[in-house]
Length: 408
Image (cartoon, rainbow, N blue to C red; front, side, top):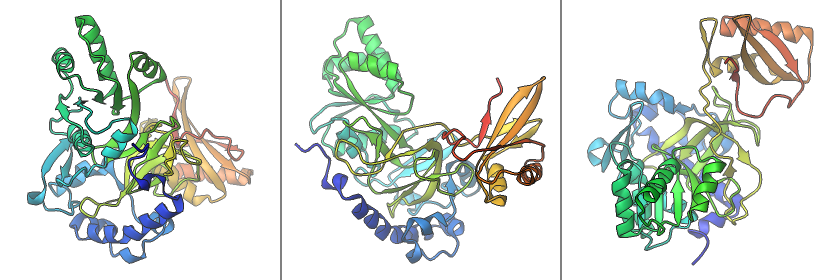
C-alpha cells in the first residue's frame, strides 16, 4: 500500500497553489449568498480574488467574534451557506460557538490525517473524543469510517469501562487527547488488563510534551499529533517525517500579525487564518486565535504541502496595564503610523510595585525624533505613557507576541 493517502499529497507545490486559487472565486461567491458573509465581504468581486495578495485585502473573520455575532443573528450569524433544515447535525462548542455538519462523506477531511498516523482499512479504532454536543467525536468518527475502519464511539471518561472494551474488542488504534491515552494505559496496568492491541494513535486537543511522547512510545504505541478545530476539522497533521505538521489539502493558510489582517514575513510567528475551499461550508480568512510559523521546504515523508511548527500559543495577548486594557490591535495602529519601524513589542513588567510598559521597536532608522514620535503615538493609541526602546532589526524574539506580559 502507498505511503500516501492519494496523489494530491505529492503534487508540485506550484500546481497545488494554482489549483487552490482557481477554485477560490467560486467559494467566495458561494459564501456571499449567505447574509452574514455578504455583509462581511461587502461588494467584493469574487472573480477578482485569484491570488494571495487579493485574498489578503479581504477582511478577517475572527473566531472570537462568533459568539456575539451568532447571538445577534441565530443560529450561525448568517455565515452558513446551507439552511439549518438541510444540515445533518447541529453542535455547540464552548464560547458558545454553534457549528454544523452537512452530512457529506468525510467533510472534515480527517481520513487523510489518520492515514498519515498509520491507520489502515480494517483497523478497529477506539475514538475517545467527545460525541456530546461538540463535533470532535464525529470529526474523527467520519474520517475513520471513510478510511474503512470500524469505530468504537467511546468518548472520554469512564476509563475502567473503556479498558474492558479494549480488552474485549482489541482495537489497534486510538483517537483522543494524549493525556487520556495515558490515563487508559495506567488504568489497564492497575487492573491487570491487556491493552497491548493498541499500537497506533492520532492525538490532538491537548499538549503532547516530549516526556509524554516518550512514555507513550515506550508502551508500544506510535502516536502522531494533529491540529484540528471544531470549525474546520483537520488543519495539519504529523507524518512519518516527524518534521512539523503538514497542511491538509483544500485549505489556504495565512499567518497574520496578531491584531491585524496582514500576513507576516516567511518563517515569522503569527496568527493562523484559514480559507476553506468547501462551497457548502465556506470560511474565508477565518482567524483561529492560535499562533504558529511556516517551516521552510517540504517534509521528508514526501508530502509536498506547506509545513507548520504546530501550536505556539494564543494570539489574544490583551493585557491590563495601570487599569487600562491594551490589545494587539492598538499596537498595530502604532505600527501603521510608522512605516520605518519593522516590528513592535510592548513589554509589560513591574517595578516598585507599579506597572511598567516598554514599547520596543525594531528599526534601521533610530533617532531621537523617531523615539519621541513613537511615544506620542503610543500615548494616543494606548492612553498611557510608555518608555520607548529602539532596537536593531531582527533583535526581538520571533514568537508572535506583540504584547509580552512579564509580570509575575
